[in-house]
Length: 248
Length: 282
Image (cartoon, rainbow over all chains, first blue to last red; front, side, top):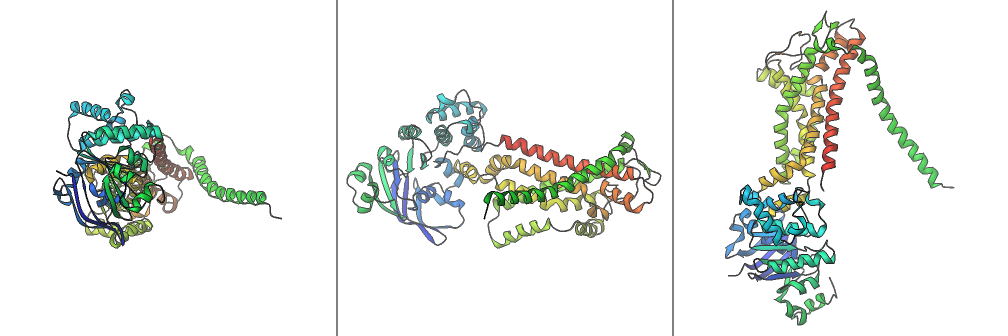
């Protein structure tokens, strides 16, 4: 069963069209990288999948996005967002302790009582490869962590609500190369359990971690193929130009 | 020849002078009132009822009256103001009607307090038949400080970063959960500050209580919210203008107590704000 089935998706912000006739699929347990220059619509595409675009009242859409065969507009939005987690471009800890950050989503959904909570938090932090670094300071403010640690905290926080899909919106744009490598490691390992859609400005990152890569330009999906193919023998000249750094 | 350094010094000088022009009168008011009022302050002045046609005795009923009125105003205005602020900042869409509502609330803060007094007289005292009572006075003061509470609370709510809301929603929290667990806790200092500023305003105003509650001379404590009460600002007005031959000491003593009460409330607001600002984590 495909994870996302997207057909003829158009999105407008007021009069500007952000996405044009996008038709594609996202497959289970893959890392799908989405690349493209700024304003290519890749973030709009990502925020469509968990309906974060709903927050913008100027937005209009047509077409269809199905999550596991169900129209996402018909799924209860809170449930949809629990199943489809999101990690943002900048590390965005909530102004809470490390523990409470991870526990936040679980509490909101009433998924665990007090005793189970500690286990859940530990489990999530281990999956986010952060546990060893923070296990002795769980009650400290999350803002005391370094940028890279904060981003892994955000990943753990997303994992704690046991999603099926994780959307990454340029998750390493604010991080140094070492922190980036750690986040990428985490993503590759997470693939076994989750489907991942990764929007990135970093073409090399897409090449390193993506199973398939989609190239967006001016709101259109230009090309979607196996990452190897996109980077060795792209069908479209514009894809070739972008990955060689000729524009964007 | 132009000398940027000299120009800068001149500019600094004028900026300093204008700033001092603001600070000096404020300082003088406080100094004069302390100087003339402090000698009047003693236990009897604070705890006794006015005697000999308010020319002797204390101001205890006026202090208690003001405390009742301010408490009543806040009990009424804080919940309504906070809920309205939450609606306006979190739920209302950006459309002409809501923009008009927001503008109206801001303008309401500028309505002269005597107009609130007349409004309170017409609505609470006469129409609802509460009479001149603590209830009428509290409601009138409450309505007067509503715009302050709504505006400051709204600003406090809106100053919570949008990204926190997005994170919370992206984890599948509902909008209300997001407001309850993320937005409100981080807006508390701003809301408290606004509330206390509103309290200070309510404690100091004379006009709104003039027609709705204030008793000229009532040397006993109110027994229920339907009783009239004395209040500090009105009492000060009365002994300064309506009663001849009141000792200056008593007038300034009353002013001192009122000023101390209001400054004390503002001080609490400042302490809360700095305390939370230190704790602010983003």
